[in-house]
Image (cartoon, rainbow, N blue to C red; front, side, top):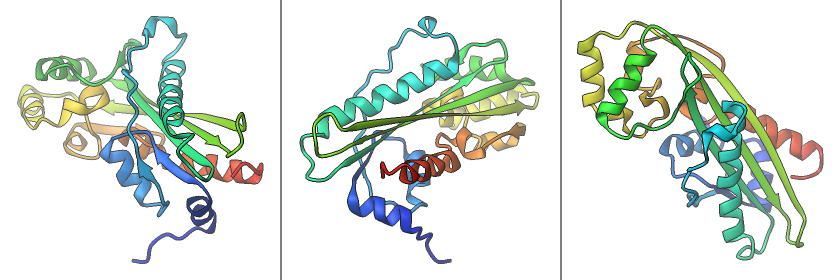
Length: 218
């Protein structure tokens, strides 16, 4: 199979220093499919925002994405001889009773989270922030988007629950599960973007780049 070579993406990679402000291997894997020339500089943001300050999970997740992108942009903006594009992203899972679920603190925490999701639907939100900075001071554009996907779990029996937690897969996953891997055996339905559940809404990201190009930003 030939690679995906989109002239817009090649132009962005040539004319801008593109940085992914995330160490997520899943986001990197998905971004690699676009054949965009970029580098990875993970954000140092502690992700310690007070959730109670936000009106919704969507507001919370986009705030995290913006701060991640801003932190990396501030570090590299004076180190580049061409304009910069920083990509920030954050994903959270929200239970049916409105609790924001991030990465579990322990295997026991993961098991408790999965028990709470069993037989119910949850929402996955990913916030994406692009910061485009020119070579002139103050010439900065911030573009934001939020994608949401509904995920429905089958009833999780104890054997599957314990076996899944024992794999270690829930450890670094928002909501303690990864649909693209073993969790496919107990997720019976999704409504929305599959890749949003993985952690990076590819179609929305490309749409953002295309819209910015049409506006003359990229």
